[in-house]
Amino acid sequence: MPFHPPVPRLKNLRIGNEVLDLDRLLNADYENVAEASEKLPAAISWLSYQRAAMTEQVMLFDRREEQAKAEAYFALKNGEFEARGHGIKPTDAALKMAVLLDPAVIQSGKDFARYKRHLALYSGQIEALRSKLELVRTSEATRRRLIDPADEDQELRTLTHQTSDTTPDPNE
Picture 1 (cartoon, helix red, strand yellow):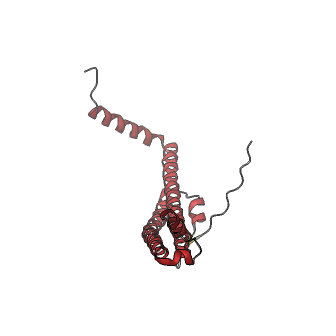
Picture 2 (cartoon, one colour; picture 1 turned 90 degrees about the vertical axis):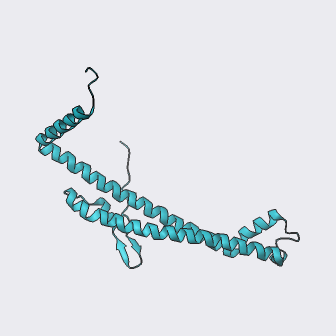
């Protein structure tokens, strides 16, 4: 029997003054779909808004990184190449490499990566919350079928009736 280490407690997600308790939302045993439908969509909606705001930030940081590269390129091209100790002759290949060593370019790249990480994190959390909601819905439907099989028979008759109305009989 394989050993499965326990899943660590999920950290709360803090954005500004707001806190979302992901561990509670994802590990709660919802007794019925109504309880889950009250809590999970609100959290999904809030995270979707945060993801949209983060997408905007990612786009801005991508632009800032490009701007930092352009500024570094022209500074190096206009005489700083040698002053920064990159050599005497600023060839195109050497300029491209020197741009990547510029502190502003390095920092903007780190900022861009950090925001992309947050964007991926929000997307993953949204997917986890959606999966939890779907799991609760499926469990609720299964529980109802087990409790009242007559409902399942009625549903099957309804589906059969709809199918016979819409699908022609190949033997006719």
